[in-house]
Image (tube, rainbow, N blue to C red):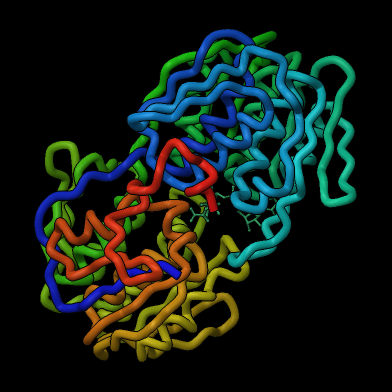
Length: 440
Ligand SMILES: CC(=O)N[C@H]1[C@@H](OP(=O)(O)OP(=O)(O)OC[C@H]2O[C@@H](n3ccc(=O)[nH]c3=O)[C@H](O)[C@@H]2O)O[C@H](CO)[C@@H](O)[C@@H]1O
Ligand SMILES: C=C(OP(=O)(O)O)C(=O)O
């Protein structure tokens, strides 16, 4: 099993550039299935296992997909298959985002049910309710969800019980090609929703209000290929901010969008971290002594659940008691046990974790439990006594491009080794022409 070995005690210094956002590019690539004519050209695409997986999903449906030099090109103009098998959905839940485009374009879509995962049960009932409100019949059985409609979907007024990111995206993509107007209320407001709406509008859709609670979509008859640049990854940026703060470092995070990171910046400032906008990025300077704080994860613009575990790693270094309350996913504390192996003092109380910060963490062998936990354990290792060995790196590769190399360039003592103990420079060293080799 590959592992990352971190030896703590080095301040991070220098500059690092963040990639395009994983959570923006996956729905954008899925939305390319809606283009019945022309080619879609998507730029600033991060080289991540999840991108290979979504590309494979599209190829499996007969779309022509090419991925080179951070550019994905999709030609979905020929007749597509409308099914996504379990082998892809199992690798990556975002595969369910093909439902909306396919249902709207072909009146049929069949995708394996994603099931639960390490962070919670993650149902897709809100996606399906939205399709039903637009006139689709939905059948769940034998491990699949199948949706179909005679003729076109019909625009509808849809209220989401909670502001689900995936449901907002799937319904927005379906409504873009429906007949008439859809009003989607209590929407997710994440920057990735805005990026998807911008992309769909460039494809010929008529969508207003993305980024607010209400999105209005006037359905159009067809969509075409377009060109698009993916927004920067706010979670990768946030991870470097936390890593800089945890080591008392001074790091310029280039290509980071401070507007997308307000809640994270505000919490870091509460902890005595200096955060400054500088050019096209954000400079983070860690203090000598970090102060404790409390956070509660919430839909955007609240504190992102995808930064919860990295923030926990930082709170472990702060003086005093901090508390994290997770309200988005019911089971996103699997990393607590792993932090405990590093001598972390923390206890779970319902949906909260109480963190006793300030005592030195000890290096240990720990396993990543999801992709953000992988990053959080590495951040904890940066400031621990001795060596931290992090395994289960397939989680990390879903969401971080060359985290080891980037941290090493900032001065961390970190390396990634294969089973034989040979250095693996990074995930991108894998044969990129062979998607099977990298998709996990
Ligand atoms: C690929 C991608 O963009 N993933 C992000 C997306 O996931 P994802 O789109 O899966 O997250 P959602 O916003 O849908 O989920 C939020 C909450 O709503 C619940 N829910 C969701 C849909 C539904 O039909 N029924 C339901 O009950 C979920 O179980 C969860 O408790 O947003 C999450 C919340 O910011 C992030 O952590 C993920 O990184
Ligand atoms: C939970 C995450 O992603 P996904 O929804 O793809 O599992 C994440 O990016 O932290």
